[in-house]
Amino acid sequence: MMDLQDFWNKNSARIPDAKGHSLYAADKEATFPRNANVCDLGGETGTDSIYFAEKGHTVVLVDIADEPLTKAEVRANELGFADRLKTAQCDFSEGILPLDNESFDIVYSRLALHYFESKTLSRLFAEIYRILRPGGQTYLTLKSPDDAAEMDFLATTATEQEEGVFNEDDRIKTRYTIERLEKYLPMLVFRRVISVLRLIRKSLVTATM
Image 1 (tube, rainbow, N blue to C red):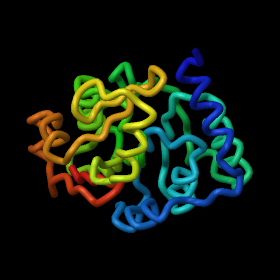
Image 2: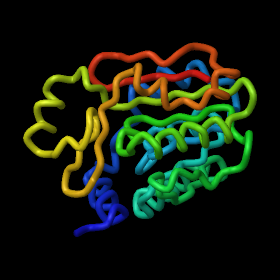
Image 3: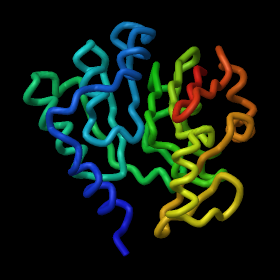
């Protein structure tokens, strides 16, 4: 059985070198404070991270796989802003982020946090809170159970261990409702909540803390 790092190395190898940033990144970057410290969780080859660095932000890109992180570093160096993009390798399934307390204005994660059961996800939410500066913002997107086609696909390729938790070849995939996600937010997070989690049909859940 392929381990998780190898799996995500192979998965990221399929990402075209010329792939640009996401529309979600462009939309949310417009709300960032200028020259922000940004943490991008699970950003693979760093397409969004590089966009943020191009906009003048300082970014730490965190991912489980080493090969996409190396690609991001090479690309940032080619573009002339290696000093604004740092990387850190981390297995999120351990529920610990190797980052300092209150060190980021922005924590951003696009489609990287729906691979963990509730206890791990709760720990990751607590870690996100820990590394955020007071008044910081968090933008998270996770796949949604409102995507009927996705749920039909999982029904044929994975085993549902419990409601919203699927096992596909020993890899966990979760599709939590907004109400369930809110339960996993540590109560202390609400001291910084600016707007509550919103569920957008198909794939997006956005939080601002």
